[in-house]
Image (cartoon, rainbow, N blue to C red; front, side, top):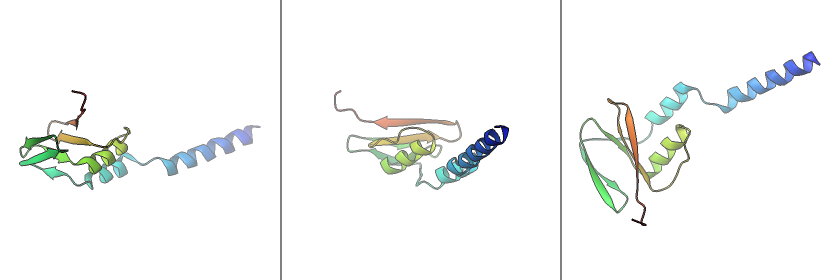
Length: 99
């Protein structure tokens, strides 16, 4: 019985190690996204644009989906990310036609 419990625990730890990315791997994956570094005028879909300065970075729709997934969030289409790495915040823009 004790041997079976140890075997199951060891198997679960092994599977978890293969399934989960380390924090360093996740950070590397996030850094490999196509970040737009300001100053620039970035498009938020076809509905809006935003001016960024040198302290801001922006991700288009596809890269925002990848970032959301990497950060443990649900990757949704037509979302755009603005961040200030210096300040440590990020925001998501999404247009809702309902007003």
